[in-house]
Image 1 (spheres, one colour):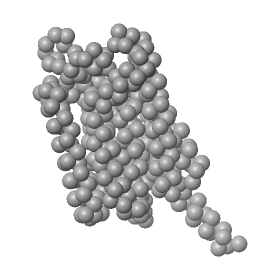
Image 2 (image 1 turned 90 degrees about the horizontal axis):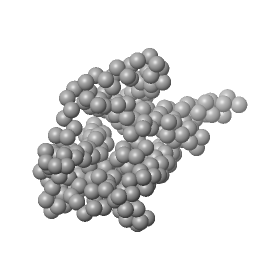
Image 3 (image 1 turned 135 degrees about the horizontal axis):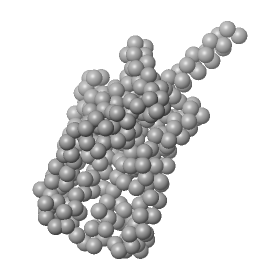
Image 4 (image 1 turned 180 degrees about the vertical axis):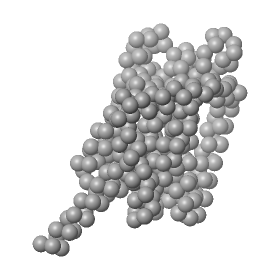
Length: 302
């Protein structure tokens, strides 16, 4: 994709015509990599140079995602060490898909959207909510599954009857998405975009991801996350606050989305990255609350 842009060719062409290539992702990552290649003097024929650049960019984006996760944990009241632990754990959740594809940029914008939304919940600043909307649209521009983070925030707004925030957020999404679509139409590749990013993903249905996930050899690593999802969901709606309920809704929706979309043939465990990251964040917040309870107990007793 980056080579096509560096050569001055359209990113999305008819995959039914020569050279029969399919660009399955939204355009943001391709454009970022091509722009960086131009800046660093890496030409379209230098495949090895582009490969190294792609891997280096992905590593940088992955580290920034961990920094955003740390900031998110701190913003919702977690202590520094649990926040660092969650950020480190997030790095271990990356599959090979995050080492040089659009997933790395997608994960960064996903975490950034959640961070902005959490700051809006705590501050009520409408500008921060608009920033969350902007980042979520950019997330979709990096990978189509960015629609998940939009759904998480819209569902939370509706569940909490934050009508004013919901109207503002929805209006911002409509305006930003329309601007993106008009930009796409102006390039003359709207039809080819659909053929590549929608029809190009229609690979049929296969349970291969679920077989890999629930194989005991693999699932022993993921079972604690899923047990945490159940425990934290029950706790959030029994005794949690607004942030707890937001995290509960987010991780359950992300898990359901990942398991459902993972039925697509060719899917892998990267479809569950968001759910496991959110479960770790929610667990860190629960731990922060437990530490406060213990500290208050000993302060009162002694």
